[in-house]
Image (tube, rainbow, N blue to C red; front, side, top):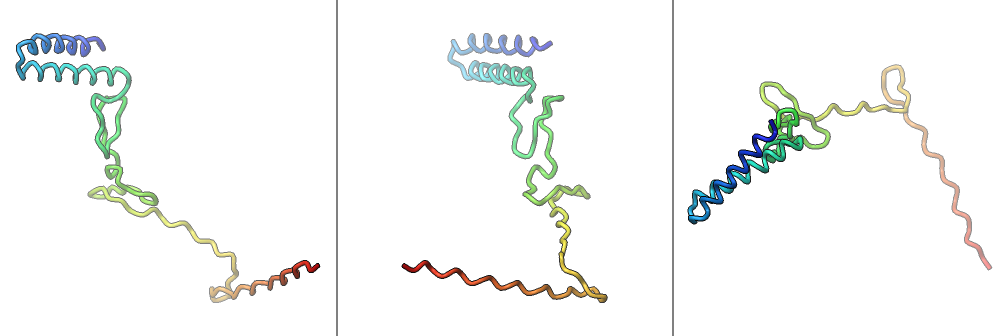
Length: 127
């Protein structure tokens, strides 16, 4: 079954060669169509898509067609695609902040202890 596109492409190349001998534009069009069909068939036979996928899509190896990415791949770092009536990029949930200070009975943060003073630098060596 994989030989049919190759045979069709070869037939197009042979037909184009005959048309090119007359110098017509039709022959050139047939030649380029044959080349395109052959390269498309080769790409698909190797597990790729029939054509190069444009930005915002990805190749579906099972079908050989280009599938659209969520939000067309336009969400940046820290964003995700949300699908509610229309697709749009939203910020990811912010990380939970953890505070290592205690709170009093009313829920107010207790003042943190002041940093301990650093010892003075040692005196330079004198000779």
